[in-house]
Image 1 (spheres, rainbow, N blue to C red):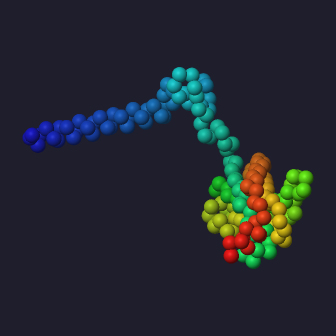
Image 2: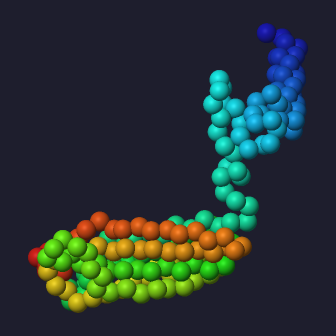
Image 3: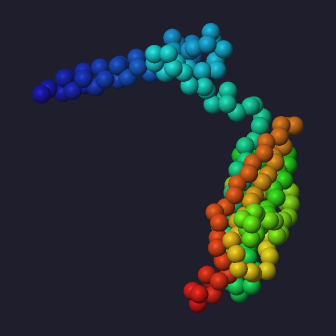
Amino acid sequence: MSPGVEIGGTIRNVWFAFLIVLFAVLVTRTGGATQAGGGNNTSRSIGSGGSVPKLSALIPKGSVYCTVLANAIRSDSAGKQVLASGRFRCDRPGPDSLTMTVSLQKRDANGQWATVATQRFTEAGTATTRDADDASRTRQVTAGCAPGAYRAVVSGTSVSQKKSRTYTMTSPTANDPCTRLKSRR
């Protein structure tokens, strides 16, 4: 094979790549023929008849999304306290305010959940984002050990640009968390 053939093939490949990029730029700048909904830019066609909303249409402009998580129930290292904890994480730059309530509940003899400890915590801004470590975004409540079934209920409300969102999560049930710890020793 002569050097002229290799150079010609390379130039041809570069030319085709340029045309593909040019076509892609033109289609994305003009919306192409795939835009649905009369040009309102809220969804894009995905074939015959279906459409998927654009992400910007699902999340209001300027709002911050947060997540609250209920951690598994455990006991302290001495086996004297039941610990319920919850943690949070929000999008940057963080909400104007995040209020989270962590509740420790115990199942009574009738099978109903009764709150044995609860506390409300408030945070705002970058302290709610992943810029802060997990430990600083975790809050807990405690109660004295007693046999029974326990769970954590974590609820929260974030406010960002006067828009409010609520979140709730319940941990799995833990049976006799202090007794289990003592039996492992």
